[in-house]
Length: 195
Image (tube, rainbow, N blue to C red; front, side, top):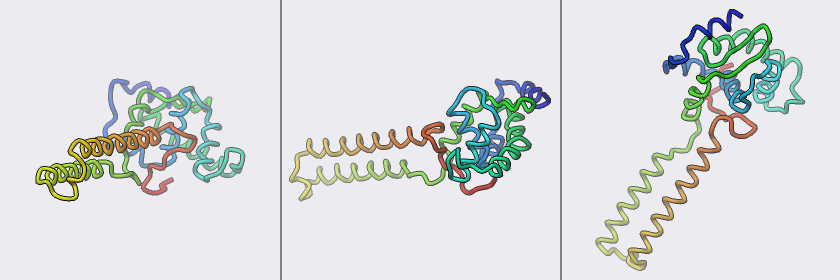
């Protein structure tokens, strides 16, 4: 109940500082906790959470997680990670009942997970390149440089518009699939494992 009182003392209107957010997100297990809570908005039991986090960490199925793997994850979640997240107001952890529930701050912090750089495609550079190529194409058409004059200006406009449209569709699809809570496996957002 001490943990519960600590989280209740945090004003829900206060937002976390960037330092607090990144302190929470720097650990892979805490990111996995947020992933799990994002998938299921109901209160969850510590045992179920530990089983899923262990499966993700050991890259196995829920059924193949060994008791030792589950116990290692369970212990560190219970003693370290969940109390830290509870204190930050990201979740409510009832250590007596072993129940965890996300707060509004969990949703706020998930935005940071979606933009943490990792092995992400450089969309800004792609759009900048497309813009530069389009500008060069306009200049070449204005100067009537062969072989670009084979197609009409309207055809080039259509090709350019289609290129930007297809790129935007692919970008939207990619972003939707990278969102926290999408799919069965959590996105790998870490620079390395720091359990």
